[in-house]
Image 1 (cartoon, rainbow, N blue to C red):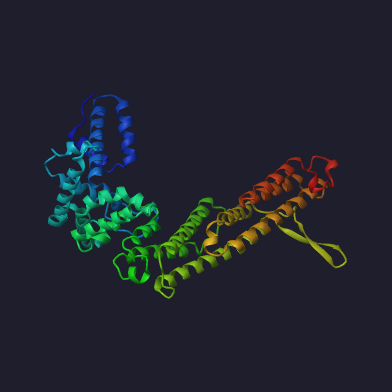
Image 2 (cartoon, rainbow, N blue to C red):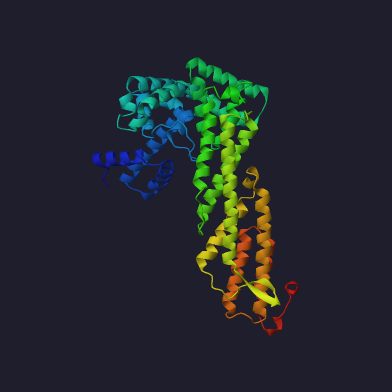
Length: 454
């Protein structure tokens, strides 16, 4: 089989360069199985690219999260992804002799070479910025970004060790660990006046849980947890970012109304949980001034979310009432009572919407407590479970008594109510209803059976 042409190699090289890590790994595993000269050449190209990316990861490891947006959307220092491969090419230049050392990731010299390459890259950013960051690439962030990128590269050697110690700083309160963090910040400040804030920025990029940065920031000095001190420092922005992120999520969920969309419910619950966790960490880590700006913003966010949960509870009650409708019937004289309206047609969309609301009310069990709404939520959910169970009991009695126009449809309706109970996390009442549905309408002998007899 003929070898790849120059044009083919150039095209494939361009595609491989843009290939995500997971896809690259898949191709590197599959292509060799194809056989033939072209497959061998392509496999060699894939192996070379894999090795090159591994070296690049080792070299720029502490800074890699800065080249992609945060999954949680919290503001952070972020450089265009297209800068990274250009930076790597310029850092190694035409001399690839040091790259062999990088292949020995466990060796003592690998990190020294990586730090040397980062220093070289910092110089390239300052001396030849157009090569690393072309003017047409994210021009709005370019000027500030170049300064920050060079500054981060200057700190790569410190950040490398800091990232390794990050779990200990998050989980431990030992004096040695805290002293290590403060020493890191002191060393970073010696590199540049804003080095301490920049090293915290790098550590922040490595945290999947953004509010956890508060545990780092408040350990930077003995008084850093106080709002009057931290509010005037260069680290105050990290607290402000968390508060802004909470406010954005509160605004985002304010117009939420589920209509049977399971993923939408999960997304809004995740937002509420995120806000609850962030506010809890703010309460734990900060010594706030009750009249300060942060306290005011936090109170406003907490109140807004509590009001939203209250509205969701009321809307959920209405949705469940529509899915399990009742009608008032006279029992004699002026007396009347609410009875299950089993024969009333209910659209599938109504049931789907009610199920989504029920799932939301159940999922709010944890975070609702942070916003002072758990007592109301629990009371209403318990009442809904009782009402739905009672509706199912009345419906099954009507079915067994031959009082429904369409038995199969009525049984489906009761099954829907069992699903609503499950969505409310009322597993045992739901199982009870399903067991009764399984034997309901079996024959005239069931007519008048009491709920407790099944």
